[in-house]
Image (spheres, rainbow, N blue to C red):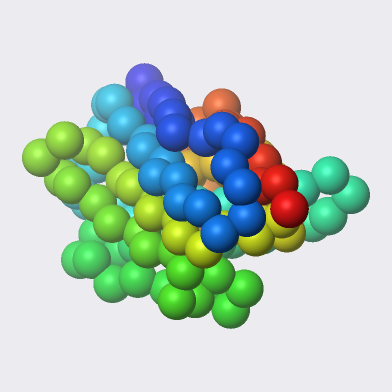
Length: 117
């Protein structure tokens, strides 16, 4: 069974930084693309960043230049470094595995990020 466990969320002031981690157990982590997604109250879910099995990355325009997604295949972990945080970044952040059908097939439980102004 595949499980994803996020950590690293919290409360931070605008301009601050947080680093989210997502540890994946089960499956062959290195074979899969991974993503970080977020959902704020009253807003649609947004894909924040993705990283392919080969290490290629992609970002939402709203976070380009501020967020960095990385992966450590030896630790079965994907990270999201978030710098210059803004109140609009406030959301529940989820990591997810993208299956071979190009759909996200496993999700973490989510971690709350709150940015105060």
